[in-house]
Image (cartoon, rainbow, N blue to C red; front, side, top):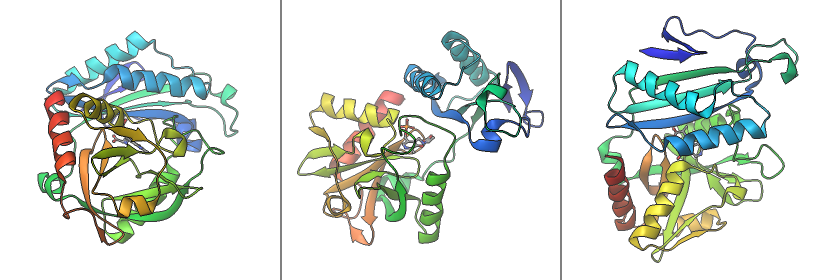
Length: 282
Ligand code: PDD
């Protein structure tokens, strides 16, 4: 495994960052999770656009130009010789002192890790996941804007812990107003009477790239999509529910808080959308 670290290609053992790195001390940084399908970096431009927008918003200067970053991604993928896999791109504020002043971390650290991906079983895509709603809330709009894909994932990790305790793979997080926001690391969609709904980003959803790809597919194949706030009640009574994410792709939900969704397996629209999604990535 070859890792890109601040301009060098190093082994896993040599890929070390400083204990004074503010990504470590404060979660001060941003990241992207990107898929490689058949040797190609999927939605590379969209991921880099989101990365550079996140950086601008938190006043983090990425020490590589857009073109240099793209070249570093391609080169890291090439050196790892993976046809299908996952890229984790991290830009942290870099090493500084113990204070939180980012001016004392003048040079950001950039690292790129390419790995094989452990994803859900094919059975899960057909039969759907069980999921629960959790008490951890996404605080919008007063906390960090969900459009920033920051390294501050503690809220999401609390959701994941609650999912683990409930014995499910993904959970549903509401925002502080009680509207559905997203999963711990996936966007959520529901379908009712043939219409596809997903929460708008102001409800606390990341502007997911898979989410955007699914909205585009819906529009192309003729499903009506509405980005509007909805509640857990709407999820319980939905005909179909699914999550989207770079790692998860399009994964159906068969049960939410012990309520069976639809027929208790991936519904026809979810199945159709997964098929269309797989046809554009392969
Ligand atoms: N997840 N919401 C959150 C909180 C996320 O962390 C992610 C990404 C998504 C889905 O976004 P996208 O479709 O752009 O991946 C939504 C991890 C990093 C992943 O799936 O790789």
